[in-house]
Length: 236
Image (cartoon, rainbow, N blue to C red):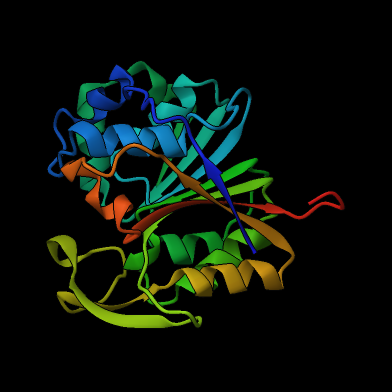
């Protein structure tokens, strides 16, 4: 069963520290959508002294956000080092708390272990060929929390929908020799089923009052969702 929590409809403005990573990004995300994502992904949690794994870290913008909120250190993983190099050119002061790993995220987490408090999986799940296996690999790391922000398909039964996407710069999230990759997009029922099987509680975060905002349409229509997963306790 998914617990649904409603956030305040007052959306916090994302901090300048995120803008610093966007300044030279080839994928510039601006305005209400980025505000909403910051509101749903970052603000509900206490990040003080947290050790964080950021899978699919892009240019480090969410790593920057959690450090700004007090995280102790972050491991960033992304296959596209050109994004990280653009952040390095800016030389933000938070980089001293970040270790960047250029690697396929799914392969990296299977061959590395760490004592992370929180694992971020933001905008990654729909770019991999086996999203269920990736989620399981996160669970096996035994973090206190997993935060997921992802596109999902519809359906009342668990399912994965295969999809062909172009590899960014011929490389993409899934390493292949071709310039295309077959990935699978899960529906919410599939994600819910997985966490139920391993005894974790799944919570969906919602922000009211955004129905008329065109820049937040993906979240309004449940095409994209924000979830947190934690190990169930006796009181859950």
